[in-house]
Length: 249
Image 1: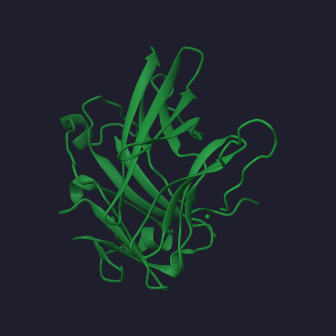
Image 2 (image 1 turned 60 degrees about the horizontal axis):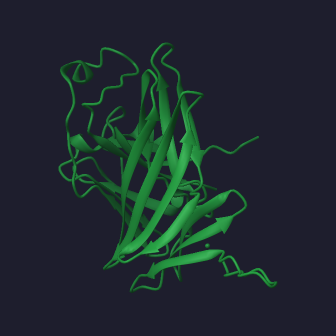
């Protein structure tokens, strides 16, 4: 599976170290949109994160961009493992970023992302290489957070499923009142006529998530929901999500 998430929660100056040795940059700018937003990679103590910041637009960021969910074959337990990028470098058409996530003593995951900004479209191509052998499965996600925004600061659009107001969409439908009230919408891309999810903010800014090359590969067993948790290399569908993260006590 290739799930995508965009949780709502509730960007940086350039710094250089001084001294005789060469300074280590704390920011690498991917580029700027025509409306003034800057897409940048920011270095913190644990590695590199990514942010989108601009006038009139919500602040979007993610400190740990390499994110996996790992399913144990025996127990069916699912663990979420996240990591900041360890290496970030400019390439001719964008930025290459990578991180290693350790899933246990016998397996690790090398995450390689290529980020591009072209005509106001921020895109990422991800490759995950499994190093080692273990039973189970995994999925990967690209997540941005909006730290200053709450659920009611945006309207939500998913073609054929939700057009801002869920009132007449039914209680249990994917874009219905129950999930909307829970502040958690998630749409498998194979139920949408176009695999996209849009957010329109009160400020007038908007963000649209889109999978430009969707696939719907699955299995007969998965289509019948025979198990709560299923993993299979033949699953090639993703999901688009938006949620309000619960406050930590």
